[in-house]
Length: 245
Image (tube, rainbow, N blue to C red; front, side, top):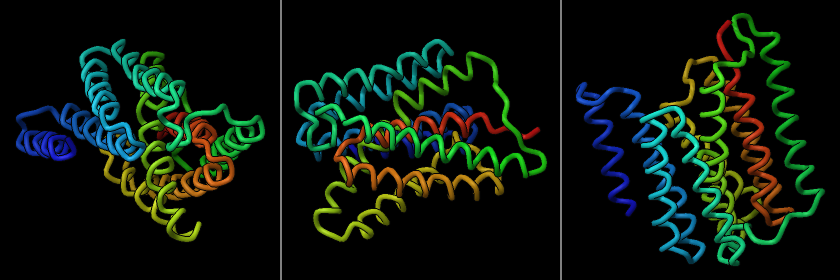
């Protein structure tokens, strides 16, 4: 499955590079393949490879629906619905999706996300040429559905629930954290749908690294993916409001 997803992303890049596929379409295919690979691997490591194949299919189908029509972005929410059904059945305990996290864990996740957004807002307010603005409702809702349905869940399931969870049992906490954060940064840098202007990129690396470290600590402290997923959604939604003024 991973080989097929890699071939799909490579084919999209080649076709896009030769002008045989619109650049945005090529980017959407590549990102969908990357997210599908992340969630499929995470579920396979959790002992549910069949569920991983279904999840990968949901990611690819939702990306196709979103590319075809703005309203199709609602299909992104199929993945968290599928994951919730697996969690209720007790099949994702190994990924940190099972028992409801305690209130302090949720508060800590929300505090991390809000704190990063607040710091980002302060930084942006002192940076000439940048500000925050609310785009067209269709774009905002599409971005929200993508982050809630695919972007953050796929990243957290693999980076924290699978990779960090395994690494922390074999290495030190800091070593496992460094591995998960480094791969999270590589994932961001490889995502063609996120802003890559040099000054935005530098700031994003900083905030994505802080988010990764914080989410690793949240998982280590409470053993749940939910607080880190909450903080990730909050940060990404605030980040997507950043525009050149």
